[in-house]
Length: 145
Image (cartoon, rainbow, N blue to C red; front, side, top):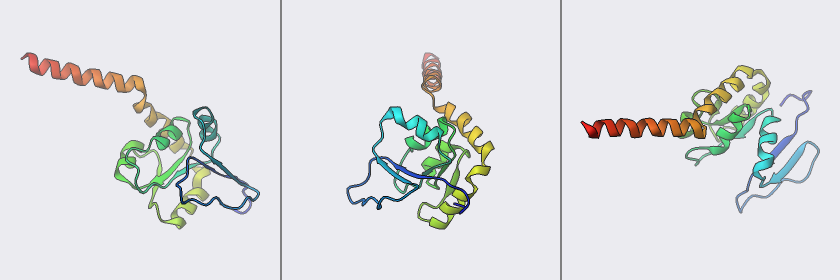
């Protein structure tokens, strides 16, 4: 990020067994696994949630961050792109330069943050229940003919 802009890098989540945490330094926090209660404040206070997944199918952390209004910077994985629905910044997961550039621009994505909250609402339990009910009602009508 810009040298004049002071931000902390916070690494949160369960790490792979082969992960070696970096040496402590100012501006770097390695939290490890975080409880559900602590996730929302982390997402809400973040400049961005960076999630460069290579293997994720759905990307629940992406959706959780979007619900909290965090800018999401994530991979171009088709499943994750379907979840974000154009409400995230997508880069190649292994392209460090693209990730850095997205972070440098993160503060300018206010409209995308608002779009993310709106998009995430499509995945609420209420919305899911309504959609499920619609499918069941449609199936019932087809089989009653």
